[in-house]
Length: 188
Image (tube, rainbow, N blue to C red; front, side, top):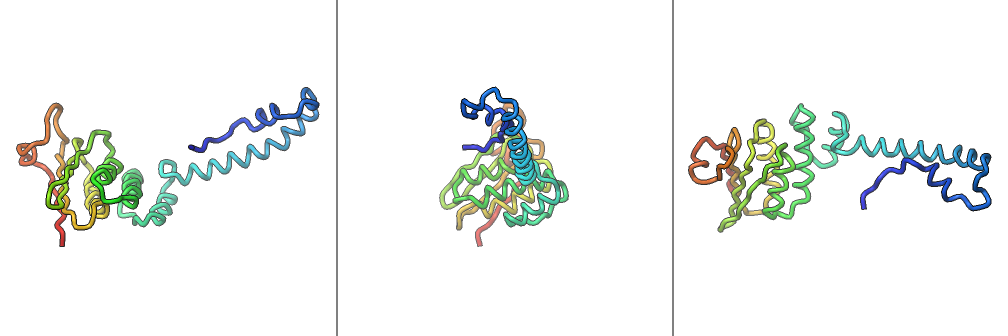
């Protein structure tokens, strides 16, 4: 159940009046005086809640949210840091599954294009997003967060194209050999 603000406290309170008080202007004025304060308190509470959401936070609040989830600010750009925090929150909730890895990559990358991941034996995962991952800082964030998302003992490989996958193209060996960014995390 999602929380939603109530914007009509007076209207809802007026409808809930007992029948003997209907149509009484003094009672309506008294009720409005009391309920107006409740509406102001709720508006202030929602303002505070919105300022501490990941989407509505400013620079200082992003730093606070970063300290809460354990992600230092290595990035100066707020939008990139916001994306990294989304990925960090998702990585913190990871169970080490392939779907968790895909969710972290989708949380960090700004594109809505699909991200593919396949598991191979023995304990290896290949990850490749169809969209380009242009800012180098996002690649650094992926290199930082993906090892914390995977299960222990699993080797991970990330493949990306600098310009993204061309329309109609599919990932195959020729694509991998044609200018891909490749990151591999070896198991120690």
